[in-house]
Image 1 (cartoon, helix red, strand yellow):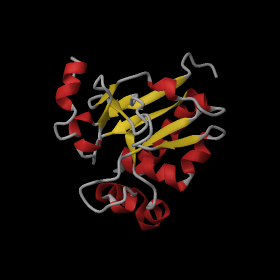
Image 2: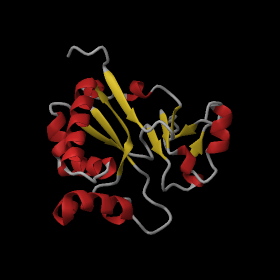
Image 3: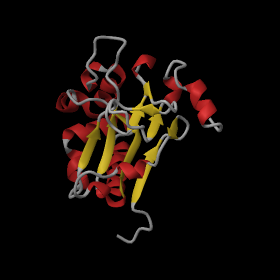
Image 4: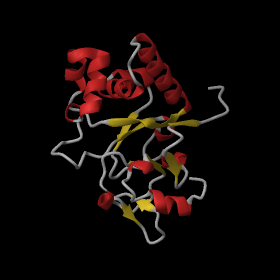
Length: 195
């Protein structure tokens, strides 16, 4: 494809830390190294919510602001995906950032989170990145942990203190670690002194 890179990670820099190489996780099926991976947030635990766009106030508002009631109806049952971390093969990532920025520029006043979720659950992103696969990874079993809306007791660690998923596999990326209500920041500061 002419690129010197085979994969890309778009990431919020201020509140993300890598525990392992995220690109090593792009495997498990044919074409996995060229797929686009987006990451679901944890189902909110403070209220009786199910983690869907329709039940998460800010995300519901952002989608409706950009796409109106009809657009919200189309995607309201999707589990909120965080726009702060997206990983993909070069071609899929380039197609993703192009369609995301086209929508943001066309709908001034929209933020990336609302557009990101609309594109995923409307089917537009899957069409835009074809022939590459779109994979929505679970927060609890995936390889990126998005801490927003989690309570500290739901975060698991191995004996070395590394944050792991429900299968005991270390998360490659911890995102929004500073929103863990004191559960991650102190220990991450010791593990990763630059934080």
